[in-house]
Image (cartoon, rainbow, N blue to C red):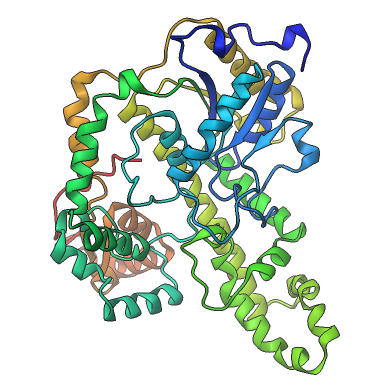
Length: 482
């Protein structure tokens, strides 16, 4: 990397008025972000800063799909497996850790490359606009989808209802803030109520003040001159790829990792336990431990080998209760990973729309289909390298969108995530909150079977039972903020 041909053509420290230049490689999980960043090291003197909210933690290397030392090919990686798995590493924490790292990398005349799918991390780093500085933030890689609440969370909700941290209390205190979050987002409910208790400031008032104060300075005071590259692929190919990757993870020892971190009735809203693939296996591991209790009590040697025997359940005959629990956990892991892909895609589009980021897309679809390495080089590496070459030799500074749309954007930011209530008559007046839950419910096998049965039995409905029959709270379902 010390060869003259590898030095930056337009070094970051070449002018006092020049903003530091960084490259951001983003994209949905499984698209090939890390591979691209490493491959770019043959063309640029890069150092990678990991921006994946689960890969920053120490542990669960298989589950979080960390690049191994061998796969890194000598490229320096920062914030990869360095954070204690028990702490909460927020967007603000990431920003505060990454800024000095970027300064050090630039001082070495290397190019900082931010790589990851946690778009809140990237947003917090590249702009001064961090809405939830005092509140924490939602995470791109939480293991739970609000439409699939597990028993542990329901129990937690019951406990919180008895305390002062209930959704109803938040609605009474600050209905605007309450409508920003899902009623089952207990972590955020607690944060909002604690903020109000300590400061006396309504969370919604803080949101509005931060938006108004910070939006106007985005164009002039963004920290870096950024080159955004998004590695993307078609949904059908990504779905197939992540399903296959889960199977490979199982073979590589995913269950061993989850067994090590497993604790009955654990809090899956903090630290590394938030990762997709931890909570999904709780029911299976609970049954496994229950069946193995006698062995644990009778022999230390047997209990010490239990972790190794977990994978033997994969070979149990179909139909056994424990095998069914394991298969269900694997299916949930695949489903939640596919949902993650969709959330990440949507958030990238919102960042592009709201903040005017000039994102250059490269398509890894053919490579994921198993085409030759030449396909990866021609369709992903070459286009990305060309974009970076142009970025480093250009005097143009990347800026967000025009100020003419800022008022509309501020309104969208203020009203984001308002959870409209939907009622599905076909499914026994089941209540769904938010368009995402409603869309997921309509696509569910149970709903579709009931619809088909009802239509066959009754011919047609005077009112369509597959549409929202009751809408309460607000009529706005803005999902604009990433």
